[in-house]
Image 1 (cartoon, chains in turn blue, green):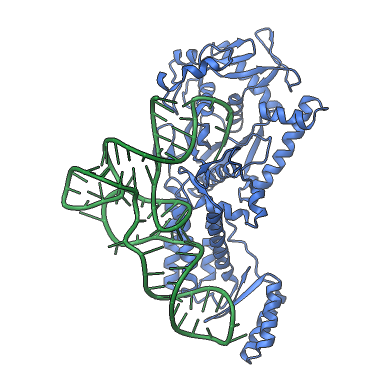
Image 2: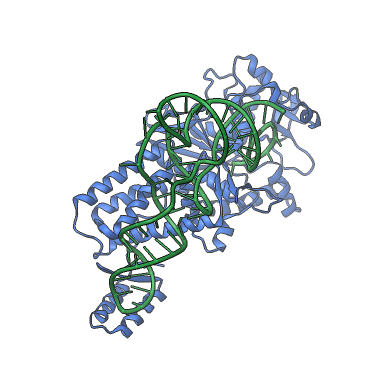
Length: 471
RNA sequence: GGCGCCGUGGCGGAGUGGUCACGCAGAGGUCUGCAAAACCUUGUACACCGGUUCGAAUCCGGUCGGUGCCUCCA
Protein backbone atom coordinates (compact mmCIF):
# COMPACT_ATOMS: atom_id res chain seq x y z
CA UNK A 1 0.00 0.00 0.00
CA UNK A 2 0.99 3.60 -0.47
CA UNK A 3 0.73 6.45 1.96
CA UNK A 4 1.59 10.12 2.01
CA UNK A 5 4.45 10.88 4.34
CA UNK A 6 4.74 14.38 5.77
CA UNK A 7 8.42 13.71 6.42
CA UNK A 8 9.16 13.45 2.72
CA UNK A 9 6.14 15.32 1.39
CA UNK A 10 5.41 12.50 -1.00
CA UNK A 11 3.39 9.33 -1.37
CA UNK A 12 5.55 6.33 -0.53
CA UNK A 13 5.13 2.57 -0.36
CA UNK A 14 4.39 1.46 3.16
CA UNK A 15 5.79 -1.57 4.90
CA UNK A 16 6.18 -2.16 8.63
CA UNK A 17 9.65 -1.82 10.09
CA UNK A 18 9.31 -4.85 12.30
CA UNK A 19 8.19 -8.07 10.67
CA UNK A 20 4.54 -8.10 9.78
CA UNK A 21 3.22 -5.80 12.47
CA UNK A 22 2.42 -2.15 11.87
CA UNK A 23 2.65 0.12 14.90
CA UNK A 24 0.44 3.19 14.71
CA UNK A 25 0.20 6.09 17.11
CA UNK A 26 -2.57 8.67 16.99
CA UNK A 27 -2.54 11.94 18.87
CA UNK A 28 -5.83 11.82 20.72
CA UNK A 29 -8.02 14.49 22.24
CA UNK A 30 -7.46 16.89 25.07
CA UNK A 31 -10.31 15.83 27.29
CA UNK A 32 -11.79 19.03 28.64
CA UNK A 33 -14.86 19.34 26.44
CA UNK A 34 -17.03 17.51 23.91
CA UNK A 35 -15.11 16.60 20.79
CA UNK A 36 -16.27 18.63 17.80
CA UNK A 37 -16.82 17.09 14.40
CA UNK A 38 -13.41 18.22 13.20
CA UNK A 39 -11.79 16.21 15.98
CA UNK A 40 -14.00 13.28 15.17
CA UNK A 41 -13.20 13.35 11.49
CA UNK A 42 -9.49 13.12 12.23
CA UNK A 43 -10.17 10.06 14.37
CA UNK A 44 -12.26 8.55 11.59
CA UNK A 45 -9.18 8.98 9.43
CA UNK A 46 -6.96 7.28 12.02
CA UNK A 47 -9.43 4.43 12.39
CA UNK A 48 -9.66 4.04 8.63
CA UNK A 49 -5.90 4.01 8.31
CA UNK A 50 -5.77 1.17 10.80
CA UNK A 51 -8.44 -0.70 8.83
CA UNK A 52 -6.61 -0.25 5.56
CA UNK A 53 -3.24 -1.28 6.94
CA UNK A 54 -4.92 -4.29 8.44
CA UNK A 55 -6.64 -4.99 5.13
CA UNK A 56 -3.25 -4.90 3.44
CA UNK A 57 -2.42 -7.99 5.44
CA UNK A 58 -0.49 -6.60 8.37
CA UNK A 59 -1.13 -7.04 12.05
CA UNK A 60 -1.70 -3.69 13.69
CA UNK A 61 -1.01 -2.26 17.10
CA UNK A 62 -2.81 1.07 17.39
CA UNK A 63 -2.33 3.37 20.34
CA UNK A 64 -4.03 6.65 21.12
CA UNK A 65 -3.36 9.04 23.96
CA UNK A 66 -5.54 11.27 26.04
CA UNK A 67 -4.05 14.60 26.98
CA UNK A 68 -5.54 14.75 30.43
CA UNK A 69 -3.33 17.43 31.89
CA UNK A 70 -2.76 20.85 30.32
CA UNK A 71 -3.86 24.45 30.81
CA UNK A 72 -7.40 23.85 29.59
CA UNK A 73 -8.10 20.67 31.52
CA UNK A 74 -6.71 22.28 34.64
CA UNK A 75 -8.73 25.45 34.25
CA UNK A 76 -11.97 23.58 33.59
CA UNK A 77 -11.38 21.21 36.48
CA UNK A 78 -10.84 24.13 38.87
CA UNK A 79 -14.05 25.73 37.65
CA UNK A 80 -16.09 22.59 37.92
CA UNK A 81 -14.67 21.13 41.11
CA UNK A 82 -13.29 24.12 43.04
CA UNK A 83 -13.38 22.37 46.39
CA UNK A 84 -11.52 19.24 45.36
CA UNK A 85 -7.83 18.59 45.53
CA UNK A 86 -6.41 19.76 42.18
CA UNK A 87 -5.41 16.29 41.04
CA UNK A 88 -8.70 14.77 42.10
CA UNK A 89 -10.56 17.55 40.32
CA UNK A 90 -8.51 17.01 37.20
CA UNK A 91 -9.25 13.31 37.21
CA UNK A 92 -12.96 13.82 37.73
CA UNK A 93 -13.16 16.20 34.81
CA UNK A 94 -11.08 14.16 32.41
CA UNK A 95 -12.82 10.91 33.32
CA UNK A 96 -16.10 12.54 32.44
CA UNK A 97 -14.93 13.66 29.03
CA UNK A 98 -13.08 10.45 28.26
CA UNK A 99 -16.35 8.57 28.73
CA UNK A 100 -18.16 10.98 26.43
CA UNK A 101 -15.37 10.72 23.89
CA UNK A 102 -15.56 6.93 23.81
CA UNK A 103 -19.31 7.14 23.29
CA UNK A 104 -18.75 9.41 20.31
CA UNK A 105 -16.02 7.17 18.94
CA UNK A 106 -18.23 4.12 19.03
CA UNK A 107 -21.19 5.96 17.58
CA UNK A 108 -19.25 7.06 14.52
CA UNK A 109 -18.01 3.55 13.94
CA UNK A 110 -14.45 3.76 15.22
CA UNK A 111 -13.42 0.47 16.73
CA UNK A 112 -12.28 1.33 20.25
CA UNK A 113 -11.84 -2.30 21.17
CA UNK A 114 -8.76 -2.77 19.04
CA UNK A 115 -7.13 0.44 20.21
CA UNK A 116 -4.90 0.91 23.17
CA UNK A 117 -5.63 4.12 25.09
CA UNK A 118 -3.08 5.82 27.29
CA UNK A 119 -3.42 8.71 29.68
CA UNK A 120 -0.66 11.22 30.17
CA UNK A 121 -1.23 11.11 33.93
CA UNK A 122 -0.98 7.35 34.25
CA UNK A 123 1.77 6.63 36.75
CA UNK A 124 4.10 4.75 34.39
CA UNK A 125 3.74 7.56 31.86
CA UNK A 126 4.49 10.29 34.39
CA UNK A 127 7.50 8.29 35.55
CA UNK A 128 8.57 7.70 31.98
CA UNK A 129 8.38 11.40 31.21
CA UNK A 130 10.42 12.24 34.26
CA UNK A 131 12.99 9.66 33.32
CA UNK A 132 13.24 10.97 29.77
CA UNK A 133 13.65 14.52 31.06
CA UNK A 134 16.43 13.40 33.38
CA UNK A 135 18.16 11.66 30.50
CA UNK A 136 17.78 14.66 28.22
CA UNK A 137 19.11 16.91 30.96
CA UNK A 138 22.10 14.70 31.61
CA UNK A 139 22.89 14.61 27.91
CA UNK A 140 22.68 18.39 27.66
CA UNK A 141 19.46 18.58 25.65
CA UNK A 142 17.45 20.14 28.46
CA UNK A 143 18.01 23.02 30.83
CA UNK A 144 16.33 24.32 33.92
CA UNK A 145 14.66 27.73 33.84
CA UNK A 146 12.70 29.60 36.49
CA UNK A 147 9.35 28.14 35.52
CA UNK A 148 10.33 24.67 34.41
CA UNK A 149 12.54 22.54 32.24
CA UNK A 150 13.07 23.35 28.57
CA UNK A 151 14.36 21.51 25.58
CA UNK A 152 17.35 23.08 23.87
CA UNK A 153 17.00 23.06 20.14
CA UNK A 154 20.49 24.44 19.77
CA UNK A 155 21.95 21.45 21.59
CA UNK A 156 19.84 19.13 19.48
CA UNK A 157 21.10 20.71 16.29
CA UNK A 158 24.70 20.65 17.50
CA UNK A 159 24.37 16.93 17.98
CA UNK A 160 23.91 16.64 14.24
CA UNK A 161 20.13 16.21 14.08
CA UNK A 162 17.60 18.26 12.17
CA UNK A 163 14.98 20.37 13.88
CA UNK A 164 12.51 21.15 11.11
CA UNK A 165 11.90 17.75 9.54
CA UNK A 166 8.19 18.23 9.09
CA UNK A 167 8.16 21.94 8.42
CA UNK A 168 10.84 23.98 6.78
CA UNK A 169 11.97 26.43 9.39
CA UNK A 170 13.72 29.53 8.22
CA UNK A 171 14.62 32.76 9.89
CA UNK A 172 12.00 34.53 7.83
CA UNK A 173 9.02 32.49 8.90
CA UNK A 174 9.49 33.13 12.56
CA UNK A 175 8.16 36.44 13.64
CA UNK A 176 10.52 38.39 15.86
CA UNK A 177 7.72 40.67 16.97
CA UNK A 178 5.74 37.80 18.35
CA UNK A 179 8.70 36.35 20.14
CA UNK A 180 9.23 39.52 22.03
CA UNK A 181 5.62 39.54 23.16
CA UNK A 182 5.92 36.08 24.61
CA UNK A 183 6.90 35.99 28.22
CA UNK A 184 8.96 32.87 28.00
CA UNK A 185 12.02 32.23 30.00
CA UNK A 186 13.81 30.23 27.40
CA UNK A 187 17.00 30.48 25.48
CA UNK A 188 15.70 30.52 21.96
CA UNK A 189 12.47 30.98 20.13
CA UNK A 190 11.46 27.42 19.58
CA UNK A 191 12.67 25.92 22.83
CA UNK A 192 9.67 24.34 24.44
CA UNK A 193 8.69 23.24 27.92
CA UNK A 194 9.33 19.66 28.92
CA UNK A 195 8.08 20.21 32.42
CA UNK A 196 6.31 23.08 34.13
CA UNK A 197 6.75 23.93 37.78
CA UNK A 198 3.64 24.01 39.87
CA UNK A 199 1.68 27.23 40.15
CA UNK A 200 -0.92 28.00 42.80
CA UNK A 201 -3.72 25.52 42.94
CA UNK A 202 -2.44 23.41 40.08
CA UNK A 203 -2.20 19.64 40.10
CA UNK A 204 1.39 18.51 40.47
CA UNK A 205 3.62 15.47 40.61
CA UNK A 206 6.78 15.29 42.67
CA UNK A 207 9.96 15.63 40.66
CA UNK A 208 13.55 16.37 41.51
CA UNK A 209 16.03 17.27 38.79
CA UNK A 210 19.70 17.86 39.50
CA UNK A 211 18.92 18.33 43.17
CA UNK A 212 16.27 20.96 42.49
CA UNK A 213 12.64 20.54 43.42
CA UNK A 214 10.75 20.65 40.15
CA UNK A 215 7.39 19.44 41.44
CA UNK A 216 4.86 20.25 38.75
CA UNK A 217 3.44 18.76 35.59
CA UNK A 218 4.58 17.61 32.15
CA UNK A 219 4.64 19.76 29.06
CA UNK A 220 2.43 18.79 26.19
CA UNK A 221 4.92 17.37 23.72
CA UNK A 222 6.73 15.04 26.11
CA UNK A 223 3.57 13.03 26.69
CA UNK A 224 3.45 11.68 23.19
CA UNK A 225 7.14 10.89 23.03
CA UNK A 226 6.81 8.74 26.11
CA UNK A 227 3.42 7.19 25.41
CA UNK A 228 4.27 6.21 21.86
CA UNK A 229 7.48 4.53 22.91
CA UNK A 230 5.76 2.94 25.89
CA UNK A 231 3.04 1.43 23.72
CA UNK A 232 4.84 0.77 20.46
CA UNK A 233 8.59 0.92 20.88
CA UNK A 234 10.77 3.12 18.75
CA UNK A 235 11.06 3.73 15.92
CA UNK A 236 7.48 2.79 15.10
CA UNK A 237 5.61 2.90 11.82
CA UNK A 238 2.99 5.60 11.53
CA UNK A 239 2.30 8.65 13.59
CA UNK A 240 -1.03 10.30 12.79
CA UNK A 241 -2.82 13.43 13.84
CA UNK A 242 -4.53 16.53 12.57
CA UNK A 243 -2.64 18.80 10.21
CA UNK A 244 -2.35 21.45 12.89
CA UNK A 245 -0.18 19.13 14.95
CA UNK A 246 2.58 19.06 12.35
CA UNK A 247 4.26 21.99 13.98
CA UNK A 248 5.26 22.38 16.68
CA UNK A 249 3.82 19.28 18.34
CA UNK A 250 5.14 16.51 16.15
CA UNK A 251 8.36 18.31 15.37
CA UNK A 252 9.01 18.60 19.08
CA UNK A 253 8.13 14.99 19.68
CA UNK A 254 10.71 13.96 17.12
CA UNK A 255 13.32 16.12 18.79
CA UNK A 256 12.61 14.70 22.24
CA UNK A 257 12.41 11.15 21.06
CA UNK A 258 15.55 11.16 19.00
CA UNK A 259 17.88 13.42 21.01
CA UNK A 260 20.82 11.31 22.04
CA UNK A 261 19.47 8.31 20.11
CA UNK A 262 21.51 6.67 17.44
CA UNK A 263 18.52 6.22 15.18
CA UNK A 264 17.25 9.66 14.11
CA UNK A 265 13.83 8.18 13.35
CA UNK A 266 10.90 8.41 15.75
CA UNK A 267 8.42 6.99 13.25
CA UNK A 268 8.92 6.18 9.61
CA UNK A 269 5.66 7.80 8.50
CA UNK A 270 3.87 10.90 9.72
CA UNK A 271 0.40 11.32 8.24
CA UNK A 272 -1.91 14.23 8.85
CA UNK A 273 -5.55 14.77 8.08
CA UNK A 274 -6.78 18.13 6.94
CA UNK A 275 -9.36 20.34 8.58
CA UNK A 276 -13.10 20.21 8.39
CA UNK A 277 -14.67 23.46 7.30
CA UNK A 278 -18.21 24.48 8.12
CA UNK A 279 -20.01 26.07 5.18
CA UNK A 280 -16.61 26.86 3.73
CA UNK A 281 -15.34 28.55 6.87
CA UNK A 282 -13.06 27.26 9.52
CA UNK A 283 -14.60 26.44 12.83
CA UNK A 284 -14.31 29.24 15.28
CA UNK A 285 -15.90 30.33 18.49
CA UNK A 286 -16.90 33.68 16.99
CA UNK A 287 -18.81 32.06 14.13
CA UNK A 288 -20.45 29.69 16.59
CA UNK A 289 -19.92 26.73 14.28
CA UNK A 290 -18.35 24.21 16.61
CA UNK A 291 -20.66 21.29 15.93
CA UNK A 292 -20.54 18.19 18.04
CA UNK A 293 -21.94 14.75 17.41
CA UNK A 294 -24.80 15.65 19.72
CA UNK A 295 -25.76 18.45 17.34
CA UNK A 296 -25.76 16.01 14.45
CA UNK A 297 -27.84 13.44 16.27
CA UNK A 298 -30.32 15.95 17.60
CA UNK A 299 -31.09 16.90 14.02
CA UNK A 300 -32.02 13.28 13.41
CA UNK A 301 -28.89 12.17 11.60
CA UNK A 302 -27.29 8.78 11.99
CA UNK A 303 -23.71 9.20 13.29
CA UNK A 304 -22.61 6.78 10.58
CA UNK A 305 -23.87 9.26 8.00
CA UNK A 306 -21.20 11.58 9.29
CA UNK A 307 -18.65 8.81 8.95
CA UNK A 308 -19.73 8.20 5.37
CA UNK A 309 -19.58 11.92 4.66
CA UNK A 310 -15.97 11.96 5.89
CA UNK A 311 -15.07 8.86 3.89
CA UNK A 312 -16.52 10.38 0.73
CA UNK A 313 -13.64 12.82 0.58
CA UNK A 314 -9.90 12.52 0.82
CA UNK A 315 -8.27 12.91 4.21
CA UNK A 316 -5.63 15.32 2.92
CA UNK A 317 -8.20 17.73 1.52
CA UNK A 318 -10.18 20.16 3.55
CA UNK A 319 -13.67 18.79 3.83
CA UNK A 320 -16.57 21.16 3.63
CA UNK A 321 -19.29 20.22 6.06
CA UNK A 322 -22.78 21.43 5.25
CA UNK A 323 -26.05 20.09 6.52
CA UNK A 324 -27.10 19.50 2.95
CA UNK A 325 -24.06 17.32 2.28
CA UNK A 326 -24.68 15.42 5.49
CA UNK A 327 -28.20 14.73 4.30
CA UNK A 328 -26.81 13.44 1.01
CA UNK A 329 -24.52 11.10 2.93
CA UNK A 330 -27.40 9.94 5.08
CA UNK A 331 -29.48 9.14 2.00
CA UNK A 332 -26.63 7.17 0.51
CA UNK A 333 -26.14 5.32 3.78
CA UNK A 334 -29.81 4.47 3.79
CA UNK A 335 -29.53 3.13 0.25
CA UNK A 336 -26.48 1.05 1.13
CA UNK A 337 -28.24 -0.41 4.14
CA UNK A 338 -31.30 -1.23 2.07
CA UNK A 339 -29.03 -2.95 -0.42
CA UNK A 340 -27.36 -4.98 2.33
CA UNK A 341 -30.82 -5.98 3.59
CA UNK A 342 -31.61 -7.55 0.24
CA UNK A 343 -29.49 -10.54 1.19
CA UNK A 344 -32.36 -11.68 3.41
CA UNK A 345 -34.90 -11.43 0.64
CA UNK A 346 -35.24 -14.39 -1.61
CA UNK A 347 -37.09 -12.41 -4.25
CA UNK A 348 -33.94 -10.41 -4.84
CA UNK A 349 -31.46 -13.18 -4.26
CA UNK A 350 -31.37 -14.40 -7.79
CA UNK A 351 -29.58 -17.47 -8.89
CA UNK A 352 -25.81 -17.14 -8.89
CA UNK A 353 -24.80 -15.45 -12.08
CA UNK A 354 -21.54 -14.98 -13.85
CA UNK A 355 -22.26 -11.27 -14.31
CA UNK A 356 -22.80 -10.70 -10.61
CA UNK A 357 -19.77 -12.71 -9.71
CA UNK A 358 -17.69 -10.58 -12.04
CA UNK A 359 -19.01 -7.28 -10.76
CA UNK A 360 -18.50 -8.31 -7.12
CA UNK A 361 -14.94 -9.29 -7.87
CA UNK A 362 -14.31 -6.08 -9.77
CA UNK A 363 -15.80 -4.00 -6.97
CA UNK A 364 -13.72 -5.79 -4.38
CA UNK A 365 -10.54 -5.21 -6.30
CA UNK A 366 -11.49 -1.62 -7.02
CA UNK A 367 -12.16 -0.93 -3.35
CA UNK A 368 -8.93 -2.44 -2.15
CA UNK A 369 -6.83 -0.78 -4.82
CA UNK A 370 -8.38 2.61 -4.15
CA UNK A 371 -8.00 2.40 -0.43
CA UNK A 372 -4.41 1.24 -0.62
CA UNK A 373 -3.56 4.19 -2.81
CA UNK A 374 -3.14 6.67 0.02
CA UNK A 375 -6.63 5.97 1.35
CA UNK A 376 -8.76 7.03 -1.58
CA UNK A 377 -11.89 6.16 0.35
CA UNK A 378 -14.07 8.33 -1.88
CA UNK A 379 -13.33 6.20 -4.90
CA UNK A 380 -13.61 3.02 -2.89
CA UNK A 381 -17.08 3.97 -1.65
CA UNK A 382 -18.20 4.63 -5.22
CA UNK A 383 -17.85 0.92 -5.98
CA UNK A 384 -20.28 0.11 -3.21
CA UNK A 385 -22.72 2.73 -4.40
CA UNK A 386 -22.54 1.34 -7.92
CA UNK A 387 -23.28 -2.19 -6.73
CA UNK A 388 -26.21 -0.96 -4.68
CA UNK A 389 -27.60 0.74 -7.75
CA UNK A 390 -27.24 -2.31 -9.93
CA UNK A 391 -28.93 -4.58 -7.41
CA UNK A 392 -32.46 -3.69 -8.40
CA UNK A 393 -31.87 -4.56 -12.00
CA UNK A 394 -29.48 -7.45 -11.61
CA UNK A 395 -30.61 -8.85 -8.28
CA UNK A 396 -28.07 -10.05 -5.80
CA UNK A 397 -26.25 -13.24 -5.05
CA UNK A 398 -26.73 -13.51 -1.30
CA UNK A 399 -24.00 -16.08 -0.80
CA UNK A 400 -21.40 -14.02 -2.57
CA UNK A 401 -22.65 -10.67 -1.30
CA UNK A 402 -21.96 -11.53 2.32
CA UNK A 403 -18.17 -11.84 1.99
CA UNK A 404 -18.13 -8.59 0.08
CA UNK A 405 -20.07 -6.86 2.84
CA UNK A 406 -17.66 -8.30 5.38
CA UNK A 407 -14.72 -6.75 3.57
CA UNK A 408 -16.56 -3.46 3.19
CA UNK A 409 -17.28 -3.37 6.91
CA UNK A 410 -13.69 -4.10 7.83
CA UNK A 411 -12.57 -1.25 5.59
CA UNK A 412 -15.24 1.36 6.21
CA UNK A 413 -17.09 0.47 9.40
CA UNK A 414 -20.47 1.34 7.95
CA UNK A 415 -22.19 -1.67 9.51
CA UNK A 416 -23.43 -3.31 6.35
CA UNK A 417 -22.49 -6.90 7.04
CA UNK A 418 -24.37 -7.89 10.16
CA UNK A 419 -27.78 -6.44 9.60
CA UNK A 420 -30.47 -8.76 10.92
CA UNK A 421 -33.41 -10.21 9.05
CA UNK A 422 -36.93 -9.05 9.87
CA UNK A 423 -38.84 -11.14 12.41
CA UNK A 424 -40.90 -14.21 11.65
CA UNK A 425 -44.02 -12.28 12.57
CA UNK A 426 -43.10 -9.53 10.13
CA UNK A 427 -42.48 -12.08 7.43
CA UNK A 428 -45.92 -13.54 8.09
CA UNK A 429 -47.45 -10.08 7.72
CA UNK A 430 -45.67 -9.68 4.39
CA UNK A 431 -46.92 -13.05 3.15
CA UNK A 432 -50.49 -12.37 4.24
CA UNK A 433 -50.38 -9.01 2.55
CA UNK A 434 -49.18 -10.58 -0.67
CA UNK A 435 -52.05 -13.07 -0.51
CA UNK A 436 -54.47 -10.19 -0.11
CA UNK A 437 -52.91 -8.45 -3.08
CA UNK A 438 -53.23 -11.58 -5.17
CA UNK A 439 -56.97 -11.57 -4.53
CA UNK A 440 -57.11 -7.80 -5.09
CA UNK A 441 -58.18 -7.27 -1.48
CA UNK A 442 -56.62 -3.81 -1.39
CA UNK A 443 -58.16 -2.82 1.93
CA UNK A 444 -56.49 -5.70 3.76
CA UNK A 445 -53.30 -5.26 1.83
CA UNK A 446 -53.04 -1.58 2.74
CA UNK A 447 -53.89 -2.25 6.36
CA UNK A 448 -51.09 -4.80 6.65
CA UNK A 449 -48.68 -2.45 4.96
CA UNK A 450 -49.59 0.20 7.54
CA UNK A 451 -48.89 -2.29 10.30
CA UNK A 452 -45.45 -2.99 8.92
CA UNK A 453 -44.80 0.70 8.47
CA UNK A 454 -45.66 1.22 12.13
CA UNK A 455 -42.90 -1.29 12.92
CA UNK A 456 -40.40 0.63 10.80
CA UNK A 457 -40.60 -1.70 7.83
CA UNK A 458 -41.48 -0.22 4.47
CA UNK A 459 -42.65 -2.33 1.56
CA UNK A 460 -42.35 -1.71 -2.13
CA UNK A 461 -43.85 -3.91 -4.79
CA UNK A 462 -41.32 -4.60 -7.48
CA UNK A 463 -41.29 -6.72 -10.60
CA UNK A 464 -39.69 -9.41 -8.44
CA UNK A 465 -42.37 -9.21 -5.79
CA UNK A 466 -42.49 -7.29 -2.52
CA UNK A 467 -39.26 -5.99 -1.07
CA UNK A 468 -39.01 -4.64 2.45
CA UNK A 469 -36.69 -1.94 3.65
CA UNK A 470 -36.05 -0.27 6.99
CA UNK A 471 -37.28 3.29 7.13
C1' G B 1 5.38 39.28 6.65
C1' G B 2 7.37 33.84 5.79
C1' C B 3 6.11 28.72 4.28
C1' G B 4 2.14 25.55 2.31
C1' C B 5 -2.51 23.58 0.39
C1' C B 6 -6.86 24.31 -2.42
C1' G B 7 -10.57 26.52 -6.20
C1' U B 8 -14.60 20.71 -10.44
C1' G B 9 -22.07 20.87 -12.74
C1' G B 10 -27.79 22.96 -7.65
C1' C B 11 -24.99 20.68 -3.16
C1' G B 12 -20.90 17.36 -1.75
C1' G B 13 -16.75 15.27 -4.01
C1' A B 14 -13.00 11.68 -6.91
C1' G B 15 -9.92 12.28 -10.92
C1' U B 16 -2.92 14.69 -12.96
C1' G B 17 -2.55 14.94 -20.44
C1' G B 18 -6.71 11.94 -24.86
C1' U B 19 -14.50 8.04 -24.36
C1' C B 20 -17.29 7.44 -17.80
C1' A B 21 -16.21 9.26 -11.53
C1' C B 22 -19.52 8.65 -7.80
C1' G B 23 -23.28 10.30 -4.29
C1' C B 24 -27.37 13.51 -3.11
C1' A B 25 -30.92 16.78 -5.12
C1' G B 26 -33.84 18.44 -9.63
C1' A B 27 -36.69 17.97 -14.51
C1' G B 28 -39.52 14.94 -18.25
C1' G B 29 -41.34 10.07 -19.30
C1' U B 30 -42.56 4.55 -18.69
C1' C B 31 -44.60 1.26 -15.29
C1' U B 32 -48.14 0.91 -11.28
C1' G B 33 -54.89 -0.84 -7.51
C1' C B 34 -52.61 2.90 -4.30
C1' A B 35 -47.85 3.91 -2.21
C1' A B 36 -42.90 3.32 -2.83
C1' A B 37 -39.30 1.74 -5.80
C1' A B 38 -37.39 0.66 -10.36
C1' C B 39 -36.31 1.81 -15.36
C1' C B 40 -35.48 5.39 -19.57
C1' U B 41 -34.17 10.37 -20.87
C1' U B 42 -32.02 14.88 -19.19
C1' G B 43 -26.50 18.70 -17.06
C1' U B 44 -21.59 19.44 -23.20
C1' A B 45 -18.55 21.02 -14.61
C1' C B 46 -13.57 21.92 -14.08
C1' A B 47 -12.09 30.26 -10.69
C1' C B 48 -9.92 33.90 -14.36
C1' C B 49 -5.96 35.30 -18.03
C1' G B 50 -1.89 33.72 -20.75
C1' G B 51 1.62 29.71 -22.21
C1' U B 52 3.42 24.48 -23.50
C1' U B 53 1.08 20.47 -26.51
C1' C B 54 -1.78 17.36 -32.12
C1' G B 55 -4.68 17.48 -27.49
C1' A B 56 -5.19 20.30 -20.56
C1' A B 57 -9.82 20.19 -15.40
C1' U B 58 -4.95 17.63 -15.39
C1' C B 59 1.72 20.60 -16.97
C1' C B 60 4.01 25.97 -16.59
C1' G B 61 3.44 31.38 -15.37
C1' G B 62 0.38 35.19 -13.56
C1' U B 63 -4.32 37.22 -11.35
C1' C B 64 -8.34 36.72 -8.01
C1' G B 65 -10.62 33.95 -4.05
C1' G B 66 -10.66 30.32 0.08
C1' U B 67 -7.93 28.04 3.76
C1' G B 68 -3.83 26.08 6.95
C1' C B 69 0.80 26.50 9.69
C1' C B 70 4.41 30.01 11.75
C1' U B 71 1.11 30.73 19.08
C1' C B 72 -2.99 26.30 22.38
C1' C B 73 -5.65 23.57 18.58
C1' A B 74 -7.93 17.22 15.19
